[in-house]
Amino acid sequence: MSIRNITLNSGHTIPQLGFGTYKITGEDTQRTVEHALSIGYRHIDTANAYFNEVAVGRVVAKSPVAREDFFVTTKLFPQSYPYAQCGPDIDATLERLGMDYVDLLLLHQPYGEYVAGWRAMEEAVDAGKVRSIGLSNFSAAKVREILDVARIAPAVLQVEAHPYWNQHALKTELADAGIVFEAWYPLGHGDKTLLAEPALTAPAARYGKTAAQVVLRWHLQEGNVTFPKTLNAQHMADNINIFDFAL
Image 1: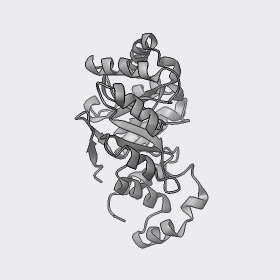
Image 2 (image 1 turned 30 degrees about the horizontal axis):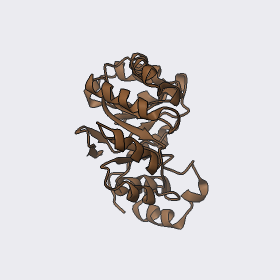
Image 3 (image 1 turned 90 degrees about the vertical axis):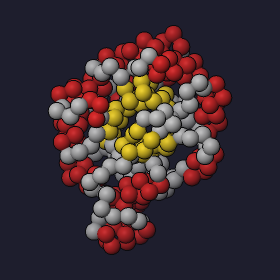
């Protein structure tokens, strides 16, 4: 197994495959993240709005793996965007995670005072609290709005992407921005219709893989960073077992 690292425009690298924690709460967070780390995941995606930063941080802290070998992403929700609020809320998210820095911090939604929030995010990079910054769910026009004022350009744009919504148009619109695309809902909301598509089942049979593994391999070859979420240990193992074939 060899998870490729992608170099961001910030100069830092991000593992192309990670583990998502959306809608995982309580004891499930600790159990699933611990298992993910035990089988080789080192990139964990969380958010203020997921209410599981504390549990994610505790698992990372007690892991025998050094902190610098993890890549941790979190996200600020729009109520944190006003400039006067953003700095304190970044400190609060670090406190919840129990970390001195976060590898990637995103503005979660394109609402509210996101331009003011971006300035506070840049200051967090200057202070060493954040290594890379980016956006989530922003349209091309709103990404350009940030680019027009940014001193530090967005490193990442996290959007819904899967074979039914490949985001090629958005990528083309932002091709000159040097932004890495991250795919959430990489398996299309767990859509059984998608996973039954002959374009996926045929190569799955040919390579001895599942249709879901074919989709995740497609993401890697598209250049997307992705972090499928599952509570199922077998699916978790399958999701990371996609480096021994190519489409």
